[in-house]
Length: 100
Image 1 (cartoon, rainbow, N blue to C red):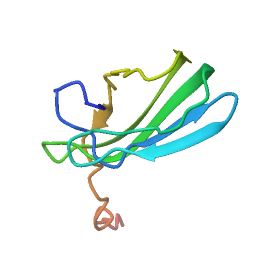
Image 2 (tube, one colour):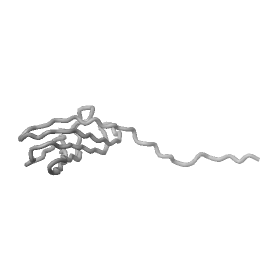
Image 3 (cartoon, rainbow, N blue to C red):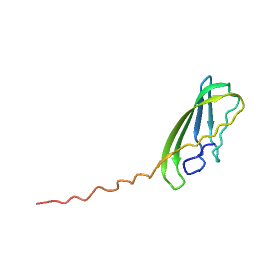
Protein backbone atom coordinates (compact mmCIF):
# COMPACT_ATOMS: atom_id res chain seq x y z
CA UNK A 1 0.00 0.00 0.00
CA UNK A 2 1.13 3.53 -0.67
CA UNK A 3 0.34 6.27 1.87
CA UNK A 4 1.44 9.87 2.33
CA UNK A 5 2.94 11.25 5.54
CA UNK A 6 -0.58 11.95 6.90
CA UNK A 7 -1.67 8.33 6.47
CA UNK A 8 -3.87 9.05 3.44
CA UNK A 9 -3.88 6.59 0.55
CA UNK A 10 -1.98 7.79 -2.52
CA UNK A 11 -4.24 7.22 -5.52
CA UNK A 12 -2.80 6.64 -9.01
CA UNK A 13 0.81 6.40 -7.89
CA UNK A 14 2.95 4.87 -10.65
CA UNK A 15 5.02 1.95 -9.37
CA UNK A 16 7.83 0.35 -11.33
CA UNK A 17 9.76 -2.72 -10.26
CA UNK A 18 13.07 -2.89 -12.19
CA UNK A 19 15.49 -5.78 -12.14
CA UNK A 20 15.56 -9.15 -13.93
CA UNK A 21 12.41 -7.88 -15.65
CA UNK A 22 10.34 -4.69 -15.42
CA UNK A 23 6.88 -4.64 -13.88
CA UNK A 24 4.44 -1.74 -13.63
CA UNK A 25 1.43 -1.07 -11.42
CA UNK A 26 -0.89 1.79 -10.48
CA UNK A 27 -2.21 2.28 -6.94
CA UNK A 28 -5.99 2.17 -6.51
CA UNK A 29 -8.32 4.39 -4.43
CA UNK A 30 -7.05 2.72 -1.24
CA UNK A 31 -3.37 2.99 -2.16
CA UNK A 32 -3.18 -0.71 -2.96
CA UNK A 33 -1.07 -2.11 -5.79
CA UNK A 34 -0.05 -5.51 -6.99
CA UNK A 35 2.73 -6.98 -9.09
CA UNK A 36 2.02 -10.47 -10.36
CA UNK A 37 4.20 -13.36 -11.58
CA UNK A 38 7.46 -11.73 -10.48
CA UNK A 39 10.71 -13.57 -11.11
CA UNK A 40 12.71 -13.98 -7.86
CA UNK A 41 15.67 -11.61 -7.57
CA UNK A 42 16.85 -8.12 -6.59
CA UNK A 43 14.84 -5.12 -7.79
CA UNK A 44 14.55 -1.37 -7.49
CA UNK A 45 11.02 -0.33 -6.60
CA UNK A 46 10.30 3.20 -7.83
CA UNK A 47 7.11 5.02 -6.83
CA UNK A 48 6.17 8.30 -8.51
CA UNK A 49 3.29 10.56 -7.50
CA UNK A 50 1.85 13.90 -8.51
CA UNK A 51 -1.45 15.51 -7.64
CA UNK A 52 -3.38 17.24 -4.89
CA UNK A 53 -3.16 16.48 -1.20
CA UNK A 54 -6.03 16.16 1.28
CA UNK A 55 -6.10 19.90 2.06
CA UNK A 56 -5.80 21.14 -1.53
CA UNK A 57 -2.01 21.34 -1.51
CA UNK A 58 -0.15 20.31 -4.62
CA UNK A 59 2.92 18.18 -4.72
CA UNK A 60 4.82 15.34 -6.20
CA UNK A 61 7.16 12.81 -4.81
CA UNK A 62 9.31 9.87 -5.62
CA UNK A 63 10.59 7.00 -3.56
CA UNK A 64 13.12 4.39 -4.57
CA UNK A 65 13.85 1.32 -2.51
CA UNK A 66 15.86 -1.84 -3.10
CA UNK A 67 13.81 -4.99 -2.57
CA UNK A 68 14.57 -8.69 -2.85
CA UNK A 69 11.79 -10.96 -4.08
CA UNK A 70 11.96 -14.51 -2.77
CA UNK A 71 8.55 -15.74 -3.86
CA UNK A 72 5.07 -14.73 -2.74
CA UNK A 73 5.60 -11.89 -0.29
CA UNK A 74 4.09 -8.53 0.52
CA UNK A 75 6.12 -5.34 0.95
CA UNK A 76 4.50 -2.30 2.59
CA UNK A 77 6.02 1.12 1.97
CA UNK A 78 5.07 4.56 3.25
CA UNK A 79 5.72 7.32 0.74
CA UNK A 80 6.43 10.80 2.11
CA UNK A 81 5.09 13.41 -0.27
CA UNK A 82 6.37 16.98 -0.22
CA UNK A 83 3.12 18.91 -0.53
CA UNK A 84 3.31 22.58 -1.39
CA UNK A 85 0.71 25.31 -1.32
CA UNK A 86 -0.32 26.33 -4.84
CA UNK A 87 1.40 29.43 -6.18
CA UNK A 88 -0.67 32.60 -6.17
CA UNK A 89 -1.37 34.02 -9.62
CA UNK A 90 0.42 37.22 -10.50
CA UNK A 91 -2.70 39.13 -11.53
CA UNK A 92 -2.37 42.64 -12.94
CA UNK A 93 0.99 44.41 -12.80
CA UNK A 94 1.35 47.19 -10.22
CA UNK A 95 0.02 50.57 -11.24
CA UNK A 96 2.67 52.97 -12.51
CA UNK A 97 2.82 56.59 -11.43
CA UNK A 98 4.08 59.27 -13.73
CA UNK A 99 6.46 61.71 -12.08
CA UNK A 100 6.84 65.12 -13.76
